[in-house]
Image (cartoon, rainbow, N blue to C red):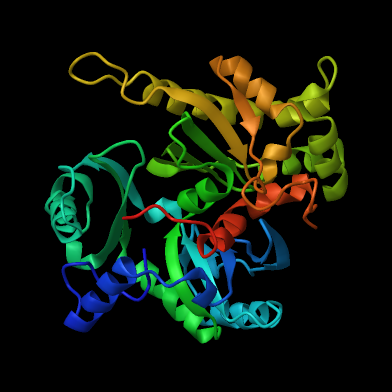
Length: 379
């Protein structure tokens, strides 16, 4: 999804349409692409990360995080564009000469689905087919939306579609412009994270991605690296932190240390375990609900349509000790914590400056930083 196209694909100027088509037909060679950071905007902070290539691996050029005052961004929607623009000005000063960025849009406002299109259908016809299906799938008119699609590897007819309200996307474009940062692309968080922790390999199983954050948890079903479904629930790790502080008298740092170093592995029944287990159980219940729905879907022939092969955890709250085993036991499926550096480096050659625990908070930023460097499947 490119910010240079401010309206729906059916309502753009001729020059925009031509430039957009040329960009796809003749993509800019990597050597000519401007260096760009991945910038991840959440309700509470702005994270950034940029990469530079060294031989066959990438190295982190710069990274960091700045807090956002309450009310600037709420549920991913920008409420104060000017204030966010000022924060992005400060971020630009930390980018060490980089003035371009790829950014993510909040999944709460997105409509993500897959659909079948005849093989080798021209792009413009696919866009018309998506627009024709708005009435049944998307509760906003085409002229109030931006939308795009990717062809899913291994399938000649299935595509991943993302539709987003135009006014929300334009607010992001305006904030970056006010911050003096050239915005090269916008995409939903699930696609960014998938680029970091997943792949388009035909051998990769269908994945239920769980982004367990401070205040909310995002779910996405990934098929060969592309989301075909997303949803969000208002359950996050901060609830565990507050419970440990209020019930056990811990400091915020003590609460974080307990979650990350002991967590669900605490022996026997204890007040500390009780403080974290209720939120863990709520997350596990949501994972189970999503997993079983998608894993058991069948077509008209009775064949499983989306047999989920694994659950992948990201997000800072996924550091909760024992969470992966807890969820795996609940759903009886392979569950693991994602590695955000797997497409960045070989650990024998380079160790990123962000440790494994904190790297889970940078999954979106890493995926965005890889967007301008990694090969993208053709649309």
